[in-house]
Image (cartoon, rainbow, N blue to C red; front, side, top):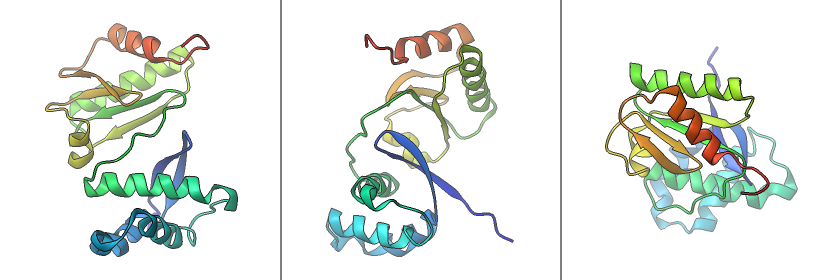
Length: 169
C-alpha cells in the first residue's frame, strides 16, 4: 500500500491539505509554457478536484492558491499571499542545526500557547525563493528574520512576540 502525500497550500490565509499534487504537477508542468494563468488554474482544479473536496463557493480561491503553488514549484514570480495569523518557516536541508531550530520553535510555540503554521522547507528552489544564502534560516510571516547558526530560545521567543498578531497591530 502506498502512502498518500499531502501538500499544504494556503487558501484565503488558511492552511489546507490536498492530495494528488505530484501527479497533477507531472501532467501539467510540461505544457504550462503555452498556457495562460487561467488555463493553468483550470487544469489544476480539474486534476485535483477528483482527489479532494473543493467547495463550489471556494473554487476561485483554491484556483488562485493552486496557481501560486504551481508557480513556486516552477520557480516563477508569484504574488505573496496575505498573511493571517502566524506563519513560520524554517529553511534548511534537515541538518542537525535546521532540525534543532524547528524543534526550538515548536517548543516555544507550545510554551507560549500560540497556534501557528510551522513548516520546515527543505526544497532548494523554495529556499532560494526567500533570497537566503545560508541555513538554517527563520522566516516569520514571509519575512526572513534570521540566517545562520541556531538562535538562543530567547531570541526566537522575541521574534515570535514581535510578529504575533494582536488587535493593535
